[in-house]
Length: 340
Image 1 (spheres, one colour):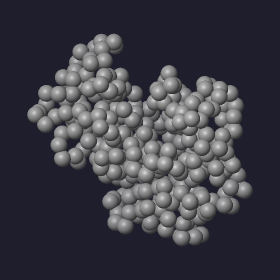
Image 2 (cartoon, rainbow, N blue to C red; image 1 turned 90 degrees about the horizontal axis):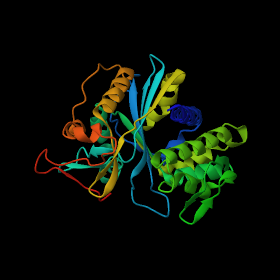
Image 3 (spheres, rainbow, N blue to C red; image 1 turned 30 degrees about the vertical axis):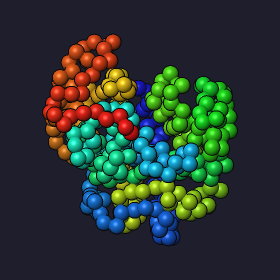
């Protein structure tokens, strides 16, 4: 868990650095926001009221291999920021977690990363909010093309890989290497050949982000930051309004004084021919309590489709070797769909 904590702290540092830089630039030249897909109408007034907020960060696989469809959100992080207590609490959510797609027409349970593909950021927010019993105020979605452009913007990054990484015809050998945007994208996308699975991929993703943040702080790149912001515009979408995005860095930069980062970890299950991660009710409750506390909300018992499923799968949790998880039986319309 210590390594995950260091990784997540690095992510928050990156977000904070970029937020401050973007905030400074926006105050100097508001033209930067014109290329970013922002909301015209506020979905929440919490930023305007300086209240604690929650933001769902979505890293989509759009923009890779020439993909133009929305794609799945292979990176999902729920961040809560409290400007009064100066605390930030973060939870990273496994992409393969069993979850109900909140807002779908029928009872639909599948991997949580499909929510963004099916119903955009709105469904992703509702699904995560229902899973953890936490209000999700805003969302920010970034696609794969943004990572590639950012790495190239800083002239590439140097990383040390603890294993050979091959994906889509590109190979990054074990050892220390300088990666351009294309190779960096390969490095963060490979998953199946990593014995750590998606957790290993997350480690590589944060390794690249940390290297980018270190170079981004150099004056020679800061000077040209406006150009990068304009280039990344089409690759970023958020339901924060222009005004809220402009005010955000100034209002919430103190929230990073204390950072608590966590990784939701589930148990592997085999459902309808696909591998899933099942989050126990205890795991969901602990996460909910910490997130709600940072938002200034009272504790509340998590009760949703996932906890009901867990209740009928006691044998699954009692036996470490058991990978059979029953997703049927709650009602006639209940099913698991592995289309996405």
